[in-house]
Image (spheres, rainbow, N blue to C red):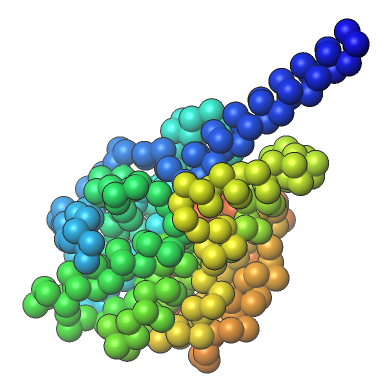
Length: 316
């Protein structure tokens, strides 16, 4: 009886700890740690204006307009859990996923030097932008409204609305842009092109991330529990947080770019996004001598901009 009681206590304690970990991990996935704006474009010798605009559900989004002398404009949309300056690994909380720092202003600098005007803004619940009512990241399912908002902002400005416009959208930002095009295609009919860097199907992404950060057993045990808890909080399944069913509504040429050695991604997802998209379209799995982590790819064009610049030059 004593042994059985001890075993019961051990099992109960294990299950309780497991539940606590799943609750914390679910919270970390849904509610992003804030990455403050610790750098400004003028630190990279770029003039800029602070801008802000409203979404259809009354959230104030903040960002930068970085002017150039050309009539070409690129709107940049960052990944979830980042800000427009990037990702600081010190701002992760207890659920630490990487030591890699991401800095976007070197990428912006490459575009600016090539003659592009740039708008780069913080998505809702990120950076300096306002919070949604529940503060949850929906991996594009809510954030597409932010893409509509930036388009409305551009169309409200005499100096911007006549420019050649393209998107450089990443991860959640890529999902959001793809969904936005499907939701209001008339708003995006004049977009010249979109570089979609590492869009994501959240259910596969989360399983792969847990598997590679910890173990396959951890993923098998934890992810279903995290999925259920997150569904209760957010009202959405992770399987819904994917651009797949929206890709057929992309209104511009699209270039899917993905690090081939990104262990958190499912490469077949990227292939499916490509397959479901209308022509003209391109796809590239980037491979280097040293394996690229997912976050390495977000820094990549700051040092090796040729792929990015060649694509935008092709259409703008």
